[in-house]
Image (cartoon, rainbow, N blue to C red):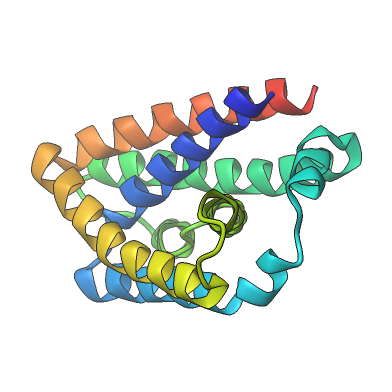
Length: 186
């Protein structure tokens, strides 16, 4: 189960980075800052966790069903963005108001699962470095996330400069994320 959760975390992070690659740099930096601030402020909550409570969370079917609902909303909005964006590309950008509105609405929503993943990562980092100040670890991880997110978005844009290629990658990553989510909560 732990390896399945790790695989789901990797795909949630991939979804997040690829989704941010469609936004302007100021929004990418804003999303990275929000993630970093979340990590820094969640230190008191993360330090109250124990490794057994984290394992219990993963093995608790009721809590995993709650995570599955959040994952389903993220996947649904991500796939909707992909479909609407491909529709915009196929029409040459000449679409109606509601099409543009829904594309913008789903495009600026980076997802909720990334915050669950960041919290899980923070707890794992705190347990990986015993004896180190919790606040130092959390704000250090926040700094890493603040630098890594824009860098990863830049790398995705350089590797896949075409919008259609990034949409294909994003769609496939969301489909795989949905399948992993179904298996993980079964």
